[in-house]
Amino acid sequence: MMKFAKFVGAAALMSGMALSTAGAADRELVVGYWLTGDKASVVEIKACSEGSRRLCGDVVWNKGGSAEAAELITGMRASRSNLSKGHFWNNGKIVDQESGKKRDGSIEFLEDGTLKVASCKRKRCSNEIWERPSSDMAELPEHIRVASR
Image (tube, rainbow, N blue to C red; front, side):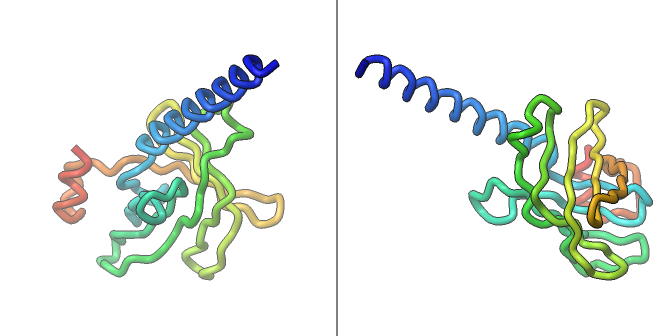
């Protein structure tokens, strides 16, 4: 019985390590700069804090020229219930840029390399597709263009 318990414990530890490694690899697909669906802003997605598994995103560029950073995504975490669906994060908030209100949200890395961002009010969600900014977008700051190569 003791050998079985050790085996089960080791198997659980290994599967947990595999999940956390997969989560870290998935997170790297999403980290970086993203051009919003209306192409009016660039959002930088990164860990919420050093060592955090949650993702946050700040607006780092606006087409209107505002360099003022504004929080747009807060506290997204990898969804364990949607592992079969792929690279999916939820249980976080999306900030409505017009009203400033935080709404339930999710982000999903799609097979074509884009990001589906959902913002939900009650059960009604609106989706937007974000893409990586192009390095030839002259209006972007140099550090964003360089990172987009």
